[in-house]
Length: 390
Length: 66
Ligand SMILES: Cc1cc2nc3c(=O)[nH]c(=O)nc-3n(C[C@H](O)[C@H](O)[C@H](O)COP(=O)(O)OP(=O)(O)OC[C@H]3O[C@@H](n4cnc5c(N)ncnc54)[C@H](O)[C@@H]3O)c2cc1C
Ligand code: SF4
Image 1 (cartoon, rainbow over the protein chains, first blue to last red):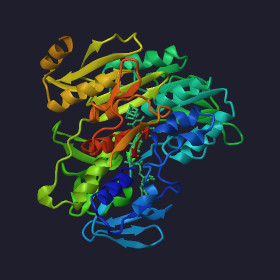
Image 2: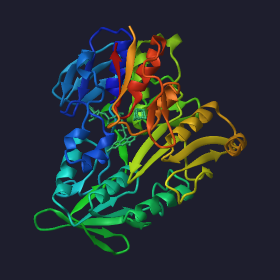
Image 3: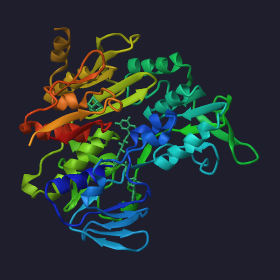
Image 4: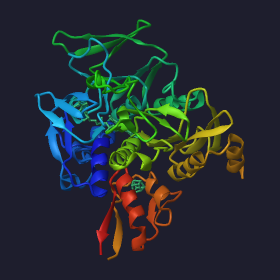
């Protein structure tokens, strides 16, 4: 995703040399967001699959599809593939994303899914088409919440199990987490909060049939979706000479080493706008950082610009479009500036240390955009509150 | 050569990304629908419209050459 955007940006900038794209998935590079939404509910799931960019075929890319890069030498810019081929390059874009975490010991159980790739989605969809009696979603993060919502839309019984006391408890302040919990309950999704999963039980054929919780409860389930986060794909970069710290560490311009840039879910960089090191798992960030990294690779060091976005993320759950711009942590202040938590639409500001950090909106995209600009301007919390009341 | 802004409203989900980029051309109103305020903008607007095309999460916008 970020990789193709980087390639597209280089082509648009006039680069006419060879661009080789290595990807271990065999499908034409596709967009992931629909996989937890339309792909699971549409009559024809194939309508929800689209290539990452419409002009993919005209970019003149050389493909190594279904092949993995197994090592990189940062000093020589040589990339070795799983079949032994060595690609020599003048520049390398690292856009290798992240892998969904699994529950240890459940890899071989039928009916247990993670959701990251199109193949994952095809497998999950087939299990949902078989009219399961109950789906258990482990983890109330964004992916888990969207899968639960899609299952409810299909009329399936769903239980979401979350070890924290509120959904998205590590990211959202409690008021917003409670709102997420209420949204699930209002749509008939059962929530088990503050309890961990002890293990999964299988029947004789190796198919999951129950989820055992730490408090001793057993929930019968014939489909289990594990949504407990992702791990950046950096294992193959061990020994490359790059700095790896929960992602590929790059400078503020996305450069990880001379001739090497990183973008998307795998990249960690210091965002000068927030003065904070971040790694984002957002579609828009993959697009924008991909473009930035591609441009950076072609630029002379002196012309390199910093990558300083206000992060932006959306999530569709039930009939709600949730959008979050900026930053948000569990300990931040929350101020409702439009609507109430009981309304179908509302907007809340998020602040900390006298500064406006973020905005959380439900079915209010235009308002979120306006505030996103204020966040970029770096306005104070007091000014934000004044602006919202005037 | 001018161009025309086309939006596939079946795909559009009114998330207003395009509006943030070019508010004189795209507007998402309180009724949650996207309105194209000017579907034949001046050629000088082409880069911004192209940015909206590229960043629309639904690939709902396209440029038709006139
Ligand atoms: C189900 C789902 C729903 C989502 N919904 C939303 C949403 O609503 N809103 C939002 O903002 N974001 C959403 N996202 C997040 C968004 O899709 C990601 O942030 C984006 O895909 C990241 O792009 P990327 O290019 O960094 O990584 P990826 O898209 O993961 O691409 C990396 C590719 O590199 C391949 N690869 C990795 N290592 C190697 C190797 N060594 N050799 C060869 N190939 C390799 C991977 O297999 C993968 O194909 C969603 C993600 C998922 C999974
Ligand atoms: S960015 Fe795309 S989906 Fe969003 S409002 Fe504009 S056209 Fe619609």
